[in-house]
Image 1: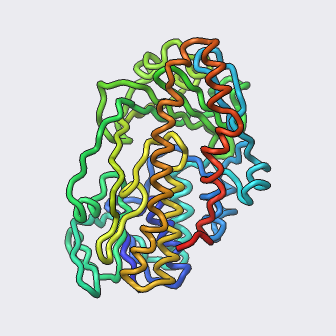
Image 2: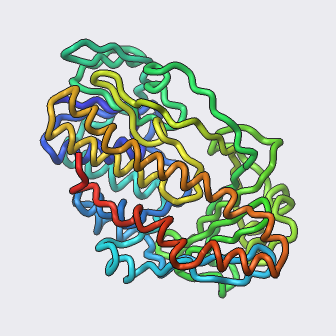
Length: 392
């Protein structure tokens, strides 16, 4: 079986690696001229790192990652702190696998290298996918200058997926009213008390800030989300200024402003949402990751859902004939990814609640919303999932 994959992001390369290891032939087509991820961090909970250990790259990734010892909730103006949950050794004991924070380009590099070790010419760069056609027996993928043929096609080409649009027409994303800022801060520019192997989530009325260490503690990843309606560009590459960012978070704790002052290149993007898709697949063509279930980045599961998708899709292609394999894959993933999308969306109101403006109400609110049972209900079902044995 030959699998064609449009998009060499994290989900596409996970699918490629899993398929190659399972004995399938794979061709990956990426429109960018170089295999280069946006320079930002991401979090990989145990349900994601489990997949990478199953694919034989867990230890390689660990060498490039940070293993935070825990995550905490902090109040936007006072800095008052509550434990969210323990990680580190606790993640290994509870879920069997670690919780990594990783620099996106380094994760992409690990996956690309692993794919090329199995098939050196599997990844085609500068290969823009324009559309496709399919018959009962094959799929033809149209590139700029040629057509490639395979047995199945996967659109792993992100939130603006050309494969999704070819399948189902243009989408209609809705602006959430939130813009997000991101950047990487050299750790040696921060006050010494901030150089901790902890993930912090600052919550406040109308906004929140997340930061966590990357690259062995050399840098701190920064994401700030704020309710603001005057910027609606859905792009990770749009530049902003530290002055604009500081003004957005005026009145927030000095630790937040220490991060902002020391951001070399702040970027901003508008957060948009798309309604859940009733179906992802037609015949021998399907979608994965942001192409079919994009979500706001407030549950730290967007990349992990794409990783799970890629592994489950590979299992289905190995165990079932086409097009049944595609139907099985979508059925196995639809409800879980919908819950993750909803959980991410629910955290907008949770992280930005107006009650956080009042110090007394804020304490009561945090202690209620982040009580142990509430946290377990939001995260345990995510972290305990096993893509290597989940029912297909």
